[in-house]
Length: 151
Image 1 (cartoon, rainbow, N blue to C red):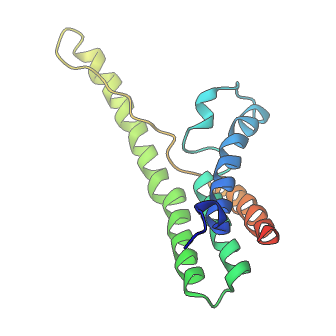
Image 2 (cartoon, rainbow, N blue to C red):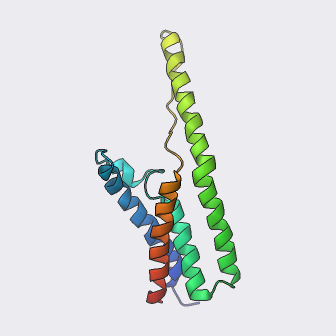
Image 3 (spheres, helix red, strand yellow):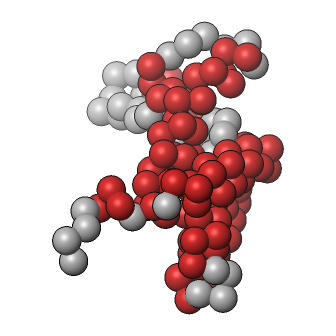
């Protein structure tokens, strides 16, 4: 009862993996030919997936510390699968839909120059490619498995 939240190794592993992933996004963006932007530090999408790295580090650290037969591992494992599926499929499709809506919004804006229509651009970079999720898995495993040595 007297321990603090920083003593929760799986939680700290997840936070560290998420922060590392966000810090790596501008690096990978630069390596792929884009300019540096502070916005990348807080953005969704990009390489590696910070959501994936967080849930994989949480799951792997729970597995190493408490064992894979533990109910916490089972819950975390299922949660990880759902998050990764959501990142690659549902959020990716939402980004594609936002792109189409933005294109139509631009067309309507040109058609109604004098009218009350004002386009709103929706965010299109929502989801992740398989490679970005795989990058998150690798980073998450490194952080999660390493964290077990600090218990």
